Length: 426
Image (tube, rainbow, N blue to C red; front, top):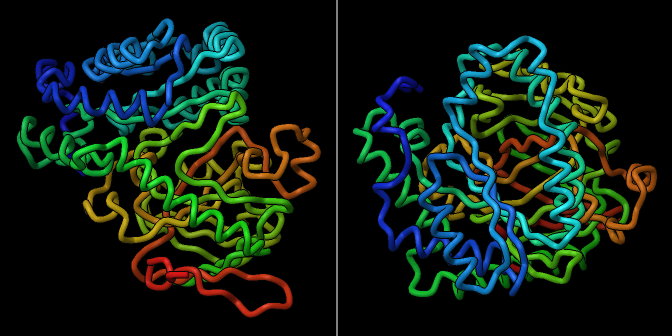
């Protein structure tokens, strides 16, 4: 889609034009439902410059809730671009490990983690793909100390989005900037359930519904899932001792939080060696500044043995070559076609939203938290159960109103879980 990357700074400097009431309601939701921030608990918050109005509202909400110290870590689009346009070649193999070590130390001390997203998801679209890949790899390696606390669910954490002019311009390139920002704001309000009289209560109800769905799937103990739709006939084996999660979950520190807002999925860990068949994407994938369209993959013995994209083929190839686990699955998730995100009809260029519009699979790293006793398992034990290991975790959407999903168990008839993209009531 066309986008004017050189809009005047006044058009893209921040989201200051946002309704203060919207910001306050979203901030309260982030603190009370997303994080469930505890009295005296510190908060480490990452935010782009463009999302500072929401970051400030969240800091106020955190302090009102009795939280401890709020520490923001701020990124800036122009400084990011300056690196790719002016930086020395060697800089693309480096990352601020000292910063991530500090974040890890904060998490070890009990701090919560909140990530605000809102930057232009295609900011690096015009930059050298190899440099982008190298920078992301270096960052992933350096981030491991901090990521361990998040991936292992040692702490309460959450991700929430702020509408910004750059992001709105990407989604609605044919609209004037103010109208585009208004459209994105309305979409975020709807998918975050801010249109309800009491959003926190609405999320409690939604979380309860997702918990019932997980309980049904966990009781069924399926060995595999079968996905069928035009272009897709895929059998996804499930890891030994897997269990389903969705909505709010309790972190190892005892705090129940919503890691993603919005969220419409229930998800679990597939078996990295037991995926067979072919699958076709139903939505484009925004990845590392590139848009990958019409992805198709063929799996054998758990590995993607063929992968094609009508657009972004080189990026797809590089992604799958990241490491040994990048061409295997680390997550499988079920999302009804009727989800609020899907019903907006938008492509958000943001996985936090796009993955909640459709059932999806993810290449790369699995969630050990979706294995029974996973938090205490060694990497070798996780692998023995079928869990995958990789530096990447990339979700791509395969569900639609034409998708059927069955639960499979050896010696039993298939169980219809979804028909035409919607849950079968049970």
